[in-house]
Length: 319
Image 1 (cartoon, rainbow, N blue to C red):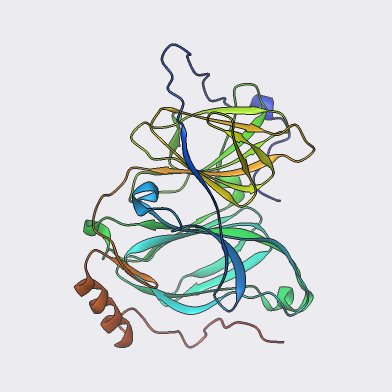
Image 2: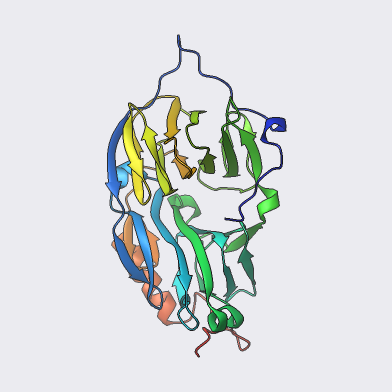
């Protein structure tokens, strides 16, 4: 996968080693296997949450893992024009290419370890679709989408984008050099990623070499969730975890993750955030605080107040 990497991990800043006298390692409270379902125009995803209680994932609303899948010619699909209001979408592409466009004039390409961070705020129309050339040829697709809730005070802010290329992420090493950490957003052990967030969170992609152990400092007032992209290992008190599974952690200030001593590294998405602890009302692509606000979002969408599809609109390619 073409995520950000380094030729020499030993030259990177290292997270600090836990002090046995004071460190509190977070226990694993539960492990779930993400179910598979269809999204968008019919592409298959593993949905890690909301298949856990929202109090465990707050402020995160959704995590979908697409692939890795090798599409035959004509099979690749995306998400056609659709609205959003009240939260942020984060699309992280490891393999393959997605194009995107919105009703406010934004757009671009996501590929090779890049991240598209879209703040929907008060409302936007949006499309994500593979380019025509890749639909025609087929190819490898691998990525994920994360939804981050906005607090009530920020739900109606102006829509905005952050386009984060793979080279923008902050690279760190584990204490012994056995794990590479890519900080997309938030602060880990005093090292900040490039993503700017309205809700205090951390979003990390880690690669743990076979047989290596990652002891990762983690902010005590954040929750902690670990999703396995690929590989197998253990976490917490030797709890097994493998591809397509999500671990939910309890309280503490360190995470412990170990890769099995096999030929395959353990690829992880590590998430944490300070819970917002506000009421959540959701209807499809709208996430507000009350049912009345949801109804207003639907009314505004039908009236064109979330934007209109532009005349030069990007559209899904059909063979």
